[in-house]
Image (cartoon, rainbow, N blue to C red; front, side):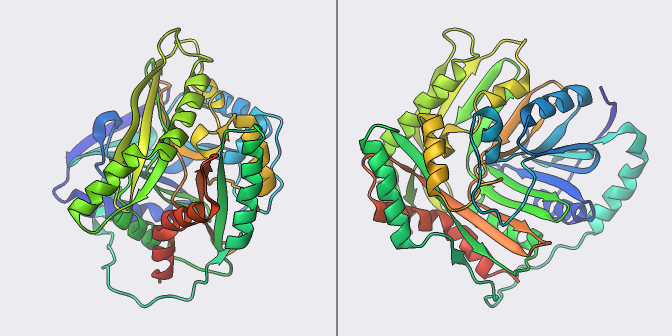
Length: 435
């Protein structure tokens, strides 16, 4: 195991320190920032973490990706941070991804950080590779001198956002999807569409901070990999392992927020009682339970929460929590491989749904509906689901965000389209108001 030097201290204004930390991190080619925004700490290990400056890394296409990750994670035996793109499905099953890809991110990327910052309330713990502990004081001085931009009102910029699938085509595709459901080929599928902008330049830090400010999600992510960026306001956890305990928290069911408290509460109650939304959620819960049954200790799979309403800045969601106990001899990467991709972003049955949505969607999903997270030296891990996110290839000047929804026999194409626009609202807002 790699030896790390730990240093702890307190910060008076943690909000300002977090902003300074992210600005300081931009000097590195590789950085991952994860922030819970102090939301629902029941399953959280920390409030936020920054990992920067790779001392080793792995980058791979989907072929044998999980085997490569397994070997890397075992050999490094340290903290590693990175992502799993949706298209690793092609490593798990006999599937392909041949749709248009304007982003060109690698299918898998992980790195072993030289420098780590863990934040809990006003407490900060630094974990540096011991050979670089002499850089701690200098780094802290530079972080405190990092200047945070003032949030002044700005005129709308010139970014032009286009739809990959327009409304009429979207409805036609959903009718095709519904015909598969009526024939019994699938019960549910998550159908996604891309919004994009070409020849566009954005400030990734500013866009991320604005997106995070209006969303305040529990799984916010800023990821920088050379000139590839992920700016995420994800509300969803994919999978977390803590010792012998494993949980997944799929989201299915969405309702808008209201401007008054009473109206907002009515919408929340209506979502909780909405039979269509509950049916979507329960189908995915059953899929997760089935995935867990492959490796769980017999009789340990439990639904801790079923269709519970969680409220966020932009929307209400139905979230379920599924857990199980696992045996010590199962490799952590195998747990991910056996549940990937997450059911909330595919459908049921999973393989049939993935084949059908691949044919109907116009864009390769890539990192969208994949996962970002980390492994610890103790073989624990925590990964989110990449939704409500902006992806940016600075070299190609290509900006992209995608949204999707669960399609069931009760779905009405026009209403599903409206739900997509609701989910896309925050990303569109910050891009149109960015510098």
